[in-house]
Image (cartoon, rainbow, N blue to C red; front, side, top):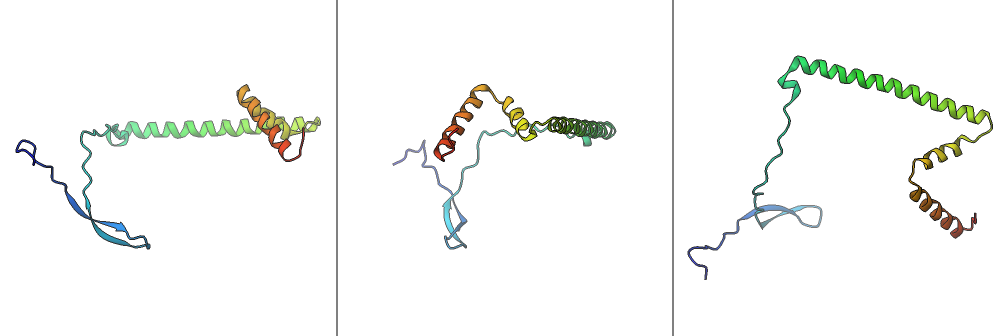
Length: 130
């Protein structure tokens, strides 16, 4: 028996909808899930639009203008890269292979070596000995 000091905790039961396994639901008496105790919510930063409308409008406009400038620069750089590939092609180089080499040069040496070893194993397995 439980002492008077430590009474037996009561388990709360609630009626819950549970899947019946046939695509529908049925009601069943299940133990209630305990509330999360001690969890504190993270503080949310104040909304800049509500707190300072005039400053936030100007700040929003500045963000949009910066993004637009960067998008213009990005399209200009993309055009420059495309021109370099076209120039290399006009001199007889294969742009597809150059793109692969550029991508591989971004990888760490150990990753590149591992990739080449696996590629050799796969080629050998399908009869494409290097």
